Image 1 (cartoon, rainbow, N blue to C red):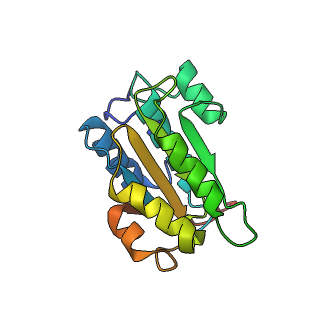
Image 2 (image 1 turned 90 degrees about the vertical axis):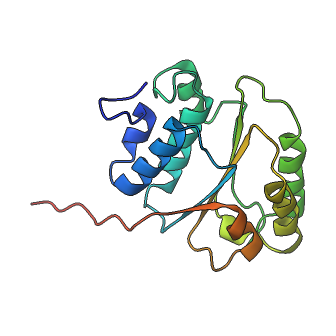
Image 3 (image 1 turned 180 degrees about the vertical axis):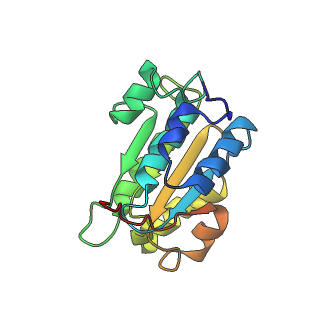
Length: 178
């Protein structure tokens, strides 16, 4: 479901990032979603909200209405086909953590047609963990979308960055109390 501009309701929450919202909306509406996105920006720029909204658009039979059972499950982080990850190591992702993701990628989705993997702190993928993820991103399985969230692409494996659709998020100025 979308508003009069055709933007899916789930993506309307990205109000402070109109370029990102419009870019993702066009990809959803035109059916040209990438298998991997790299959301780049500072904390608080809305990257997590955008990742969740995009996941809703992908999972929802109504195109991201934001209010159906599937969208609510995504918002509550309880949808079995949308997985959220953060580095479990002191300073980076663990190899076993990435291997577990890659094993899950091979499984058929439970409720939806597509599985979405959201990796926060993707700029903390190092060594063997980064290389393990790279192979899957290089040879994507259909019905799988990765959303990597990072402060900067500079700290990431260049081959991972090159396989992702980069989506820059601008700094959101603080609200004034005038």
